[in-house]
Image 1 (cartoon, rainbow, N blue to C red):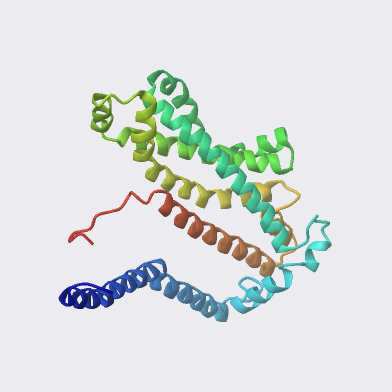
Image 2 (cartoon, rainbow, N blue to C red):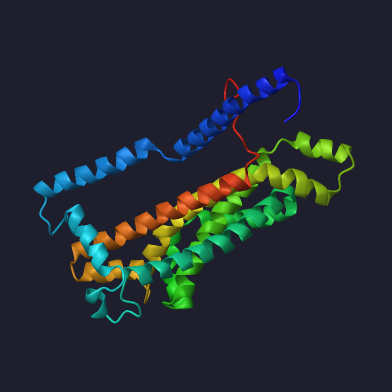
Length: 294
C-alpha cells in the first residue's frame, strides 16, 4: 500500500472506527427488531394465565402446559377430529386452509380497494357513484351478511373468502382515498409545472406519496381478517380452524378450543411480523426524522 505515511495512519485509525460504527448500527437494527417489553408481556400473560388456573377449574380454563401439550399432539394428527369426518383432521391442515383463504382475500381485496380508492380520490364522478355503496357496506356489520353469503355461495371456501374480501376491500378503499386526500396538492402542481404527464404524476407522486399509509391499512385489514375468517368458518364451513373450534365447542373440549385459538393467534402474529418487515423495505423512503438527526 503506497501513500503518505500520515494519510496511511489516518486511514488505519479510521477503519476500526468505521467498523465499530457499522457493528453498532447492526446491533441497533437487531435490537429494534426485538422488543424486550413484548417478550416480558408474553411471559407476564402466561404467568397470569397459570395463576388463574389455581382458582378456576380446568374444565373452564386449562393450564398453559396442558394446552401446549394438546397442540403438540393435535398439530399433525388430531384423533378427536377424526370422529367428525374432517377432510384433514389436524391443526396444521386446518390452519393452512384458513391461512390460504386469508391470503387470497387480503391480496385481492387490498388491490381492488386501494386502486378504487385512489381513482375515486382524483375523479369526483367516480367518487360520487362509489362512495355511497362503500360507506353503506362499511356501516353494516360484515357478520350480518354472513348468512346471505352462506346461502349464495354455500359452505365452501367461496363464502368465507368473499366475506373477508369485502371487509378488506372496504378498509383499503377508505385508507387509499384518505391517503390521496392527505397528499399535499403542491407536489402534483409542481410536477405539472415541470411538464409531467398525468401518468408520470400517478407513478412518481401519487403512488409513492400514498403507499406508506395504504400499507398501514393492509396490516390493519390483515389483523381483522384472521378473526373474521375464523368466525365465517365457525358459522358454516367444512374445513378450517374455525370449524375445528366449532367441533371442539360442541364436544365441550376446552383444551382443544384453546389449542386451536392459540395456533390461530401465533400464526396471525407471525404473519403480521413478516408483513411489517416486508412493508418496511417496500416503503424504505418513508423515514421518520427524529430530533437530532437520529
